[in-house]
Every structure is written in C-alpha cells, then in structure tokens.
Length: 446
Image (cartoon, rainbow, N blue to C red):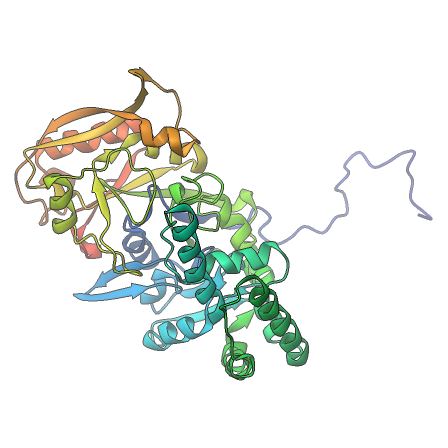
C-alpha cells in the first residue's frame, strides 16, 4: 500500500492500534457435568447465579432437565438457564443451543417474571417433524440392530444433523424474509420425507405457527456474538455459563454412540457462546457422590442389586425430561479423572452425599482391569468398556443423617474421609458438598 514502509517496520508492531476496552476481558465461570448427566448442575448454577449478572446456556436443547428448589418450590428447566430464578440476572441462550419454539414459550411463560431472556440470531431451530423423526429413528434402530440409543425423542439429534448437513434453519432465517424461510422449510420437510416415507407434515399449518412464534421471539433476540463481546469487554460483570448434559455424553469424547449430539465439555462454552478461551476462568465440574445413567450404554460401576435399588429410591432417580428411572451404581473415579483431563476442572461440586447415609459400606471405583491387568486410560471402544472389571476401594458407612449439615465440621468423620479420598484421587479440590435439594444444603468448603 502507498505510504507503508515494509523495509523498516516500527519496532512495536502494535503501535498505533486502537485497543479494545477491558483488553483482557471479564472471566466467565463454567459449570459442567462430570458424569453422564443429572449430577445437580442446576443447583450449583442457581447458587452461583445469585451473584451473577449474566447466566448463559451454551449447548444442547430441551433434552436437558435441570431441577432447582428455592424456598421450598421446585422448578424444572429444559431450555432456560437455571439462573433465571434470580430476577437480577440476564439469561442468554447461545448459538450452540438448538431451540424448540413451542417448548421455549411454554417454559418462558411459566417463568416470565423471573428474568429477561436473550436469544442468539444463530440458534438452530428444532421443528416438530424433527421430534417425529427422532422417534422413527429409534424404532428403526430397534428393528435393525435390536437396540436403541435411548434418546429423549425431543428432536435434538435430527436438528444437529440438519445443522451439520447445512440444511437446517436458524432464528435469523425465521426473523428475516419469511417467504425465503418458507421455501427453505418446505425443502427441508421434503428432504426428510424422502428419507422417511411415513413422515407426514402439515406444512402450511406449521408455517403459520412459526410465523407467530417468530414475531413473539423478535423482541428478545440479539446478535449473540456482539452481545457477549460487549459483556466480556465492558464494565466488570459476573458471567456464568451453564452446560447441559455431561462429559460422558459429549459427541466427541463421550461413550459414543450412546451420547448427545453436542459438545457438552468446556469447548462447547467457547463455540456455543462465541467466547474466546482466554475468557474462560473457573471451570466447575459437578458429580454425584455415586453414579447414575439414563438410557443405554456401558456403565462399569452399575449395581443391579439391592444397592442400586436403594440409590434409585433414596435419590429419587427419575429423569426430569423423560420420567425414566435412572440406572445407579458406585462412584466411578475413572470417569471423573477422564472428565477432568478434557475439561481442566478447577473445582468439583459433589452432590447428594446424603443419599449414602444409610449404607453399611460404600465402594468407589478407582481403576479398570482387562484380564486382570489395569488399563491406563478410559477406553474409547465401548465393547471394551463393557468388559472391564472395576477395582474398588471400600469405605465404612457413616450411618448417620447428614441432611442438616451446613458446615464441613458438621459432617461425620467417615463422610469427611470419603470426600477427601475422592478429592485426592481426582486431583481436584471439592468446593461444595451437597446434602439435600435446596441451595441451603450446599456446604461450601472454601
């Protein structure tokens, strides 16, 4: 370019560049599941949201279910961030989430006085036919393979598939030229009908409803990239990011194919909200004091016996979204270490310790063996994971009620020993211990 001296560049290459405000930016706190989901993330988010300016959901869809208890009232959230209970927080749903509009509005109306909802232009849309296709696919798997994945049939997988094949539709399409949106919608329907002959869709009726939903949604939508940039680089703010699902359900790092369709590890916070890695601060993993799983797939520490039944009954282990009973087993430190390798947890919240109160002895899985030999890492091959033998450490039960404990010193010594063992074995400090449903039942350690 004319006037540019390439021979003798300035000694400081950044000289003259305009610096952004708050160059480093605010750091965000990320809360993630460290097992197969249902660990109590909602409770941790609710606790942290009381002091947060923004509470953001970064990925997943209404297949997630977070239960929060505040002042004796129980709330179930599927799409909205759990922090919406705090009326002072702004709630943001980011690009990485797939959004079913009828479900969203039903949930938002039930909580309309609890906070302000902001949605990103780039959100992908779950249509009713995606949900039908989800069910058809499960039926086909059962017929051809004799087994299912165990999806929630909320249309999440087919929607992410549309997104990946670049035929999906986004909120910006819905709020743009509706004639163009209608053409794309009809093409998408025809594409799915060509693959699933039993699929019937009342296209005109669907388009009429979608137009109405779009106008209701319009006042709440912002460009998420710019909104988050301003939040990160403007005045100091406390920003909380809530992950859905969990590490072992991650599409890339989970127990594939029995996983969800998004990245529910820490990278999903960056891609789902447009947050640079530089702005990731604390990363809190949430784990139960035992292990549960919904649906199909390997579960090395599962207890198909009276212990598993006791954990299921005492823990009220029923899926928020599906109503299915959760499979239950001992705490598995192999998967927690694996989740830590991927996410780099800075602290752990250990929930539902009180469920173990009545047990005479408590086991913890510390290693996997194949043919009597320890394997050094979590296996990617699910057939191998089905075959592993778990090596356990056994602890005496504390046989006393911990639900009234509010401080570390209130916990029985045997319970403290159990917690410290878990902490030391994972190599991550435990910041909270949960002994009940409400936020008051979270013992903060530091």
